[in-house]
Image (cartoon, rainbow, N blue to C red):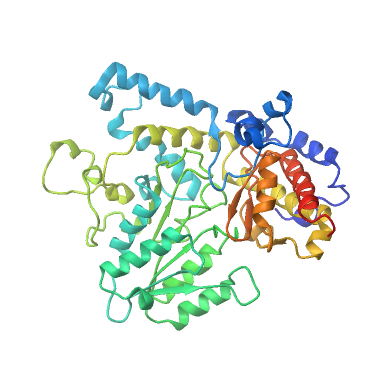
Length: 457
């Protein structure tokens, strides 16, 4: 969005009427009605600051889609249809499905949607497993250590599961993780990684075989320059994979065009598939027919034309589907399908990104305008990059001294966000279902809580 800097020019962002006006102009506002939003009473219960019934029945201010997305209302009906199919058809539902979603090919229901969302060809994507198991699978295939190249590069502050996976994978290969795991951290006094520093490390450490970073950093919300890093690492002889848990459904991606080797993601955050939902996998088309690399094979990765012949000889499906191992959870896959249809209703990720940039900029500006004295007193900091193009829809707020007091206060006000100990609260206005009114209410609640925690800033 070229005029982001001027979008709020002339508007009194501290006036509720500004939020109301922005919501009235929002062409995607109707999508909010497609999602089930918990009430204040549901989430805060007897801890809420108000006890009257009307207040408790109002929707909470849900800014936690970066941790668990809200449920599309249609998901309940679609999943119930699968129960109906199971009850009426039993095993026949694999081929004779009353709603034309046979279980033998249920993963095909989401393939095109996923490809559109991550900028890929259908052959390059599939739904399978969970995020960390997919990372293990991809390291089995793409991490081929040699005497000269035997290291894996990740962020020092990568999501802990990525650290555990890389550590255990190196150990399984007989490589000392203290040597084989290369981590990169922001410069002293900074919160975010500089692209130039990432490139410098890749250039200087000739032993790096695999670069595996996050598309959007879970702790800070920083959106990495995926195409630049991928291209540079390839030129230096590295394989490049991305953990897109906080990027998919959040920011525009062009994985095929960017020549990414592989990428993995979960689907319960921005893809709203429900807790523990089925994960996703991208493998570039250039590997679609490559059977020379080792893989963790399973029967669902066998060519679907002869999968049920039960041959002891593995003949992989072409592309990402050839890396599937077990038959996908039908209920989880249909839950994912339901949410992906919401992206189609929205007109795709670009339309949502345009709204997301406005929402997050509004949040940032409103925080500074409302809590100016607290910023000056260093009671609160924003860790996320200030450039809207270099972040997703999340702002990570640091409270150096009393984060849990602030978090508990927000929760009692019906503001649902998440905390990352010891000092960070993450707020994520998701464009599919959040409004400018949500942002306004969250900041006003934070202002009240900060006044209670710090009576005299």
